[in-house]
Length: 119
Image 1 (cartoon, rainbow, N blue to C red):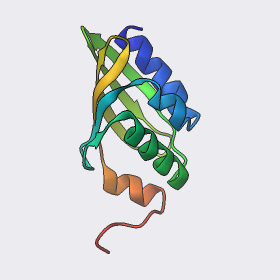
Image 2: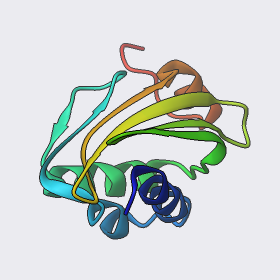
Image 3: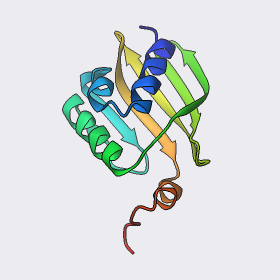
Image 4: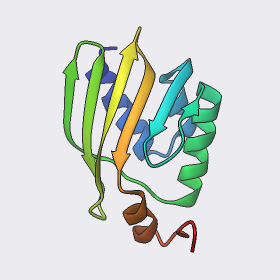
């Protein structure tokens, strides 16, 4: 799959809260770094991270734009509550090798009535 096609699949699986299906899109040694959190290393840890996050909050990814340049895809997104962000995905041999995401964690926690660390 080309990077843009892969990210379209990623969004479908994300919106179904399908941690197993999402993990299948990553290389065994992939890294997922949501900049508000520590990087997650490896497909199994990425699967566990998605399962944990889906258990905490109902999340929906609405695509605003997907850009593709070589082995990279950039996803600009929003959610129904007004949160916005973007993700950068390096796709090698049809799977995600590296992902970095930017979004406002404090706003996310407040929108989902989740505890704010340090309070």
